[in-house]
Amino acid sequence: MSEARFFGFVEADVLGEPVKMASKERALLDAVDRPHLAGGLPEISRIVMKAAAEVSWRLLLEHVKRWEESALVQRLGYLLDLHEVEVPAAAKKKLLSLVNPTSKVHLGSRAEWGTSGRLNRSWGIIENVPREQLVETAVGRRRLKSFSARKS
Image (cartoon, rainbow, N blue to C red; front, side):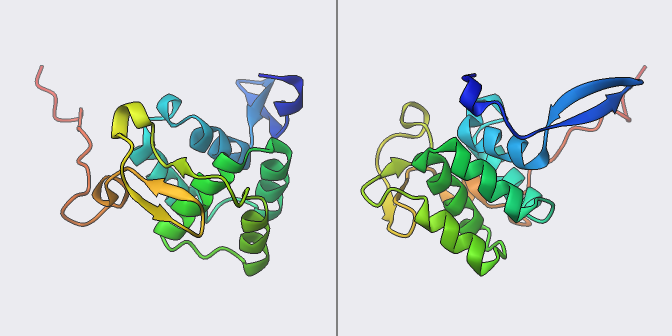
């Protein structure tokens, strides 16, 4: 990680020792920036939906601005809209202002999801990931394996 990207960390107490950890806002951006390291795009979509209620929009915007990468803003904004997250109007306006108007990026990795898809003009995102992979439904919700019923 370059020196310029080393921001957004907080000190936490882990077993009595001070440890630097990513803030919620930083962790969210790291996941959106590198979905393959955070469970894949379907998992990142769920993370964005759930984390949006817990982040500081002020800090998130500060971090996004320092990141200086339109593709990150485009993917984050698209996922926020996809899940109909209530983003404060000023925050949404700021996010949109950070998007390079000529930038068109694929939502998911082209190697994994292909290159075809509809263009979302608001965010300049090529929707190459099927919507049903990104949005939980009552029928499509993933089941988590339970280890409590393990036979001895």
